[in-house]
Length: 207
View 1: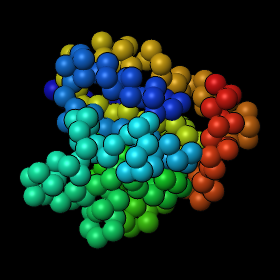
View 2: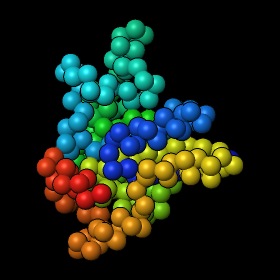
View 3: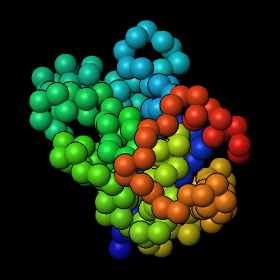
View 4: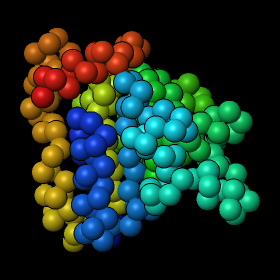
């Protein structure tokens, strides 16, 4: 039996390290999805910056555009038109969250939300991935504030071991919820303004 497990991380590098641990433990990259805030524009696409993450929607550590050119396929098959091109590059604008770099099997759900302008689409995608509604609020808010969500489909028997592995650098959701609520936050608001790069930097400095 396959189940999904998800964790929130303060930044993409923390999440990437978790993804590497999952793959080293035998989880296929095809069973892993990542949703990473791009509010601070860490992902800039093809601009010759060696520190920039390449477009890698399928998480195979190869540039999707080069793979598409080699096979004659089109990058961005998830959506249509301009949205499809953006999805192929791993970039989506999610209502209530802002710019997100998305990769893996969860992209289709998010692309549909973005195409339809669905407010709170991140909540729907997360709950479809098996995250409880209350926790999905925290995940979505964390994503809005610069975080990264990693979701993996794993065998039920392997879940406890893999969850423990992911917990090493993951956000403790109850603790983060308490911090948010102390600042007056109650739940994810799909109409809240997007975080700026400066706000993201200040948010991460808190942790």
